[in-house]
Length: 100
Image (cartoon, rainbow, N blue to C red):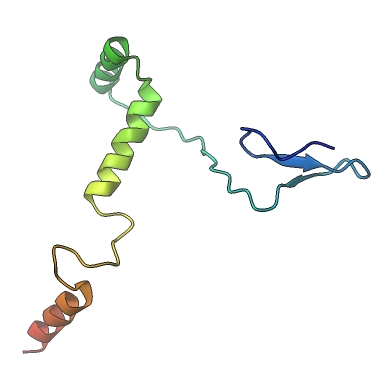
């Protein structure tokens, strides 16, 4: 039987009796999904130049860029107060203005 302990991604236990793999209970596994995107040659050249200068792979640069872009768009949307304003109150004011 294989243990769930250790720095594995997608940790599984294998039952000695059945030989069936099952996810370990209580372990959250971050899974990366493979995607294919078209990138313009000039952008790819810039990513390669940054990789040579910093050692950061092109794929990691793209992942960080996507995270930065989503954070700049507040995705997922914040539910807490923003800049000292109550988000609900701000939305209610906008609806009240539309009714007038």
